[in-house]
Image 1: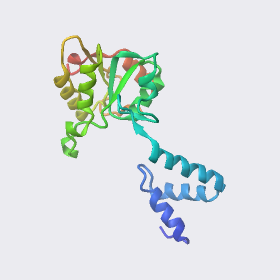
Image 2: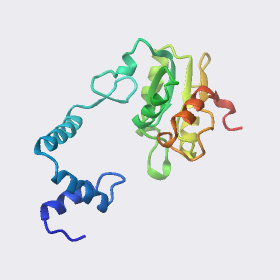
Image 3: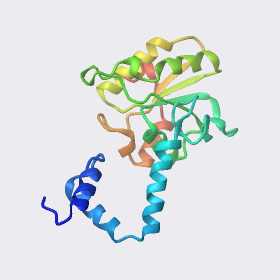
Length: 204
């Protein structure tokens, strides 16, 4: 791609480093920014800088938060005895959009994938175990992607935590095998939460 402006070229190069953004889309975005008012650009830059400088991970659930403890964990309207295990913040947002789950979350930050060099120690599993030991948890819902890596992670956690008094369940397979939760429509995902099944039956 040939540019008449080195500044434009540099902007396109940086924008195209974002996930899912190719050079053509990056060029379209860069040209859009060129035509925006300076005040609008300043607001955009400030929001990105604030995100990078100030966002933290909730000390309890490990989701992205503005404070040490996120609003979901602090809410008095949540079922604190039900814990939903998800891969990342996008899954929290997807489930919250269904309006069907009122428990708490625990964000692993990924899933076990030996091919990618990701083992249990790279995930928020130890903090999950600590939560289960220190909090009164009656049910753990596995809501990881329906992939081999997701199932492997579910089973690993189940073996590490399995104890009397805790019911383990997994979202119903209304979510297609191999699908990521963030791409599942809200109705299907909501029904999968409501019709969750015992984890021990999920592989049968």
